[in-house]
Length: 286
Image (cartoon, rainbow, N blue to C red; front, side):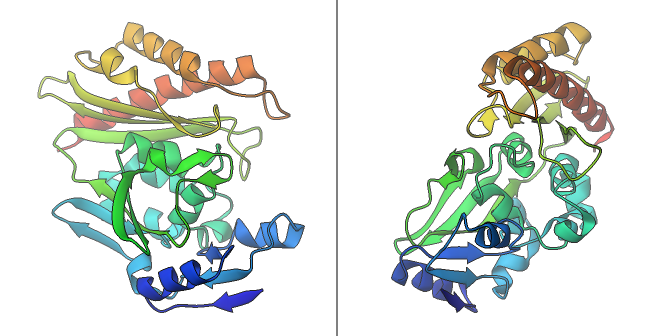
């Protein structure tokens, strides 16, 4: 197995394109486990931690751009990003232990393509866009289009996610992310829900987006959410409809962490609670 540590995005793309079956190493919290367990045996490991563009969080006129190799601890320590996107920061802060958060990268959490990845539903709710670079140049896609199934992505040979763009916030906007795990910490989500809201001046919801995770082969956009939430003030009847819609959209499996019926119920409860948190945050946002 080869090991390469490119100093630029171009070098990383060239290495990935020239070595069939190569894998990207960012934080390594998924890949190293897979290597040691024998579930992965790539021809090469391309270490991207030394590429400066992948390690930066930058605020621009378009919003916040987060490098794909930025770790969870760097996200939760970035005051301006946390203030603008608390739900995304909450999701990043739930990945593993403190030690894991010092290594696990945002790009790795998304591109590992686990249905239970915490950051993916939060990024979906935020309308995050991934920037991808490959042999044929650059392209951008919504985060929900990256994972195509458990452990599978839409990335072509030689392509790498280099950053995620969180759009600039309108006034009176906020998000929230919640998950349920069997234990008190360091476990995989039974279900997760991210909610992103924008309010009018009188507190009426003007825009809404919801992402749900761990209840289907990939994280999902809850398409029914805008029709349920927009035009309301997040009253109990509206939240009940949201919970019902989240459960109906879920396509979970039975496993040792939960049954199909349990997951459908839980994801509805999480969507309802996350929406209420996001609503209260948005009322206090400038």
